[in-house]
Length: 537
Image 1 (cartoon, rainbow, N blue to C red):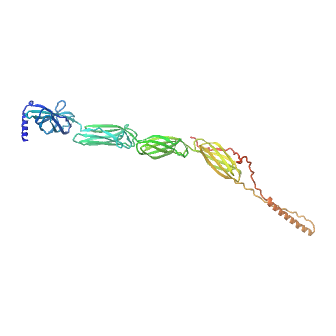
Image 2: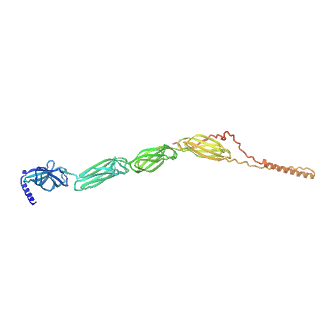
Image 3: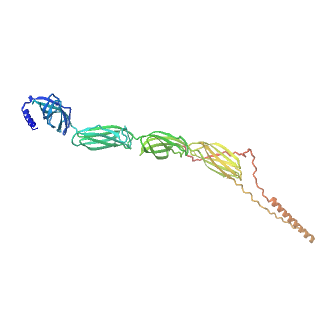
């Protein structure tokens, strides 16, 4: 080894003294390239191959330089390689050479050529000057920006986001330098010039690979539509921008609204059916506002839960008022309308008999007053009927067509009824497929019998003075008194048995015209209209 070193020193001295023109030029080849950040350094290995036909006993690294594309030498570079002496570098043999190269910060970016110069000696002491050329790329930016991408966190692969979900945007940044680099990174979500989300960060990029990641919340306050996602990274050496159009949906859509019945009776059940397509499970509020002639008659809000897939929700509709009703139905989430529609239906209220009163206008006549209520806002055709029965016999029975105006209607009927008997009455009102009935009974008290007066007759006998013998006159007077007493007793007895007895007044039996009993048509009923009926709207 010592002899080799001495020989090498002597060889170098000899070579230094020899003129350059006496040397033969040979090249080493390589497929490697070097990339270097200006103001930084780079280290690595290159593979050099003896591509010529010479086999060298000793090869020594001498120097380097850098040229641009025009062949101009560029200063500002430092290079060290290991090893610097190679032995037995035969033809087609490849050596691995480690390097460390640095560059001044004022060197412009571009592609240069690094030249390496070697002195090589063969076994017969022939000397050759060997050159190796390595492509050298000088870059001005320390960061290499990878391609950014975005996805929906809850449903990766989806082309749109739902309200309440999160959009993730990210990219990789490669710091090829050997020192930290500070960057500004930001992300925004906007639509029609309005920014709904913005975030900015100052980040440090370490040497090597760095991941930048933002999470963008898609709030429930965002209306459905298409939004622009903007992502940007910047520093003194350059910048990177990424943008993407992302549709936003709530995930619940009202696709159908139907009505159970468009005509119902007062108090009868009626419903609306909402058909929904949902991509999520979420709680909503179902609001039903019902109007009649523009006036609000009902307002209800009910919480409902919508599940994924196809859902059918029932909405109860009010039927406690009559008329033409319109219900506005809305599905909302936190005040946001998800879907809405309206249905119209008619509530019919059959007229009814509200009250029946009667009064006795004479010994045998009774006046009935029948009050009927029509709660509808239009006239209703109906049939009014009555039936009066006493002792199982129908006294009166009839029906007639009536037109009931909105509000209260009154009918007055006068009947001649038997006294001292229980009379049953029944009034009916048939309209709109319904019948209202009012039944009852009454009893006409017979008039009180006349008071019986007993008359006492006093007979005054005239005193006649007859002159008779005293014995005969006394006997005659006694006989007359006895006869008068007997007549008085007989008269009182007879009056008590016959004359003092009051005869009971009886009603003559009516002539029967049919097996059902006497039928006397009542006076034509009079309908008294209320002057304060509600006006038609």
